[in-house]
Image 1 (cartoon, each protein chain N blue to C red):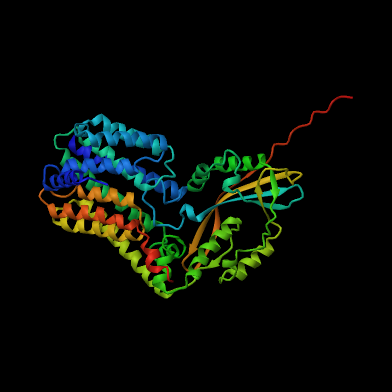
Image 2: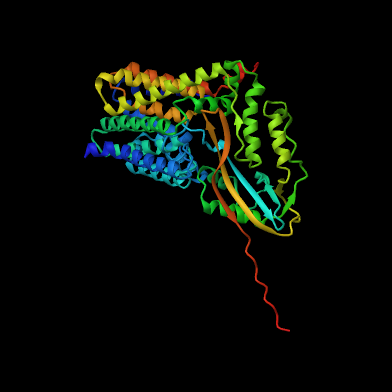
Length: 194
Length: 296
């Protein structure tokens, strides 16, 4: 009985760790969390994960939404965002998409082609400046109070990006870990008989 | 500030804890101190944990009241379990350890039981950590540590200092990553700059960490008496090297406790070493990287 009690807790530890490894390797859980002791083993930490939200309007224009901490619509709390980055699920991404659809959105006055000065003078500066220009059809907008500038939003693409480091080529990039689309419900208009 | 009487009492308690029979009591008390400081995440349950721990520390007879330990386990499971995928791993470890304490109090051989459980927990933790480093695929070739040294804000100053690379160049990598992430630009490959000295350092550190963690895991699982001194030395080396570089004090605390409980009753030197490390780890709160490397 004493032996059983001394191994009971370590057995729980091993079971939790095995489940965590499965969820991280086969699913979307970050290796750093979840009780598998995978911290400092993978670059896939939550600090290296990003939320990406892109709107498509009725004429096919694409617009990036910056979901800023202070301007988040009500359900998108800091905790919810952290949870989403740690363990993204389709349900959580759809909730974010639905909240963005429900929010009032305006086009930001910031020029997306402008990159921070400190970065502009770094070895990455020219490349990133060029990328910003080629991606100029993407407007950085933020959900703020006010009126919407969009006549119609046809689609919201929500994804969590994670970093990948290729040791062989010596390059790093962001890749979508999980991506989902949310479309607004089209309201049926009941025609009145004349 | 502690009065002279208070300091004397604490010193006496620690002395009793080191000298033999009080070892188990000191382990339980240190566990309560740890839980009080770092136990629960949820604010509501943190208060419950802190009050329970404070009462158990103030009234020594409550230390042996098993239901209070079970209450602590429940509070931690409820408080931390709700966000199981977002909490740090040391919260898991603290919950396991509290459960082990609660289970051991039913047994007449509680200190022996707890010692064995601690050994197996350390073995499980370190083997899981080693397994992750092997399967993640970025550790053995050093690319994980190399990228982390360049992008982790806790290490960037140190990286600039030891590699001789201007700080701005080191900071630019993190900024570039945040720039891509902030604009949702995926599929754009950027070069990781090559700093030869840092490459050598991170590859060496990777293998050293793998070797130490794997050894600590295996030695603790084997439980061989011949490995007693080596097992403790490896665990202490890991704690000092890791947490001085990456100050995660709660994790260091729980590992120190798991090592301390495993000390033989007559091995006062080993117990003192763990307690000295526990005190020494407070130095990690000093921003020494900023002080030493800020001129870079």
